[in-house]
Length: 450
Image (cartoon, rainbow, N blue to C red; front, side, top):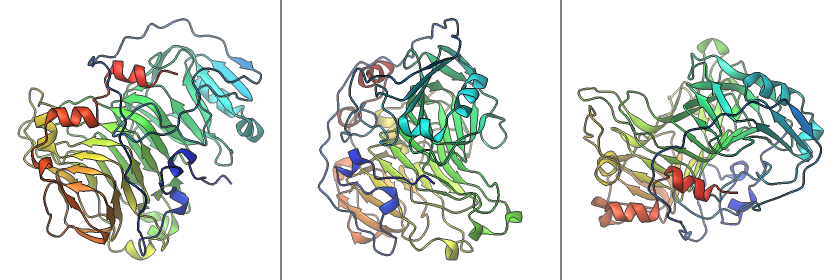
């Protein structure tokens, strides 16, 4: 069975890999404050239209030599900068043992994934999709999966699925659900809303979406979903809605035997170098609208948000659901907290004032919560982060070199302390443009060039 290994690029910065995170009983993050290095580019917010070409027949190629830009080393950022890539996944330009070219269809992709052996995966596999459109069949809990039950948790490396002609040449139209697809990495896609359900060990990288959900599907006792990761995934399509932009959720059915059996658990997922813009609820609506929500009817823990930016919707930037009292005794003693490592979280009022003016028909935010909700006891930690908004009054496991606008009564810290930075009460647009450039189409094409 595959086990997550430490990511060497992040380990070199002093970050703690998920499988070796300290427990909630003794959590203390260390290391020096990371320096920010970002490159500004363009202000174009449009996405270039695709120019579909005839789909190619499937072709299976022997081992390929490496080419182009070498694998990057992660550089600290608040959002995508073209340097974050999972270490257990072939790089875009890596030499691989097997390369498969397929037409742009779910059926062709399924066939290619089913043909891969453990030895193939160990030697590196790259599947290239011809230009075109893939049609989603609905996302969330009600959608019909477009890919299901392919891949394997035993694969030593993830298999890379990428457009043959680069970022933007393959688009997923409509919400789509990918279910029980293991150890597969989807990269350089344009897509609407994407649901990854029970996708242990899989990932999405260097892609632009309208929304995403990572979900721990209840499929029976022991069906834990873990290590479903996102690297430089951008959601920047602000619009009027009553649904959260993104979320990580655990599943559970009461008939399965109780929360102790692992059914539907979600744990140890990484959100690295990502950027998520807000959504705004309709004027007059009371919808509880978050930009990213951690939620679920089952147990979840151990998420790591690294080098990411989350801009608040009407309620908050990050909503952390609490753990039901009945579940607390079943939380593993070695469960890692959810960590915010070098992240920018912006409250709704500040988000609207500095970067995201309200669209027609949107209700104005009344709150400025960067984080709302307590989570599990001692279930949160932060390091080298900036919260331009309020923090929920709960007890944090550890806080190091993390700024908040003003003291927050009740937001206690077991190890460390908050750093109060009053300028965050009224930050400027220029400040955010400097530390977290908006990932426009031209910006992404520049930093994702390879």
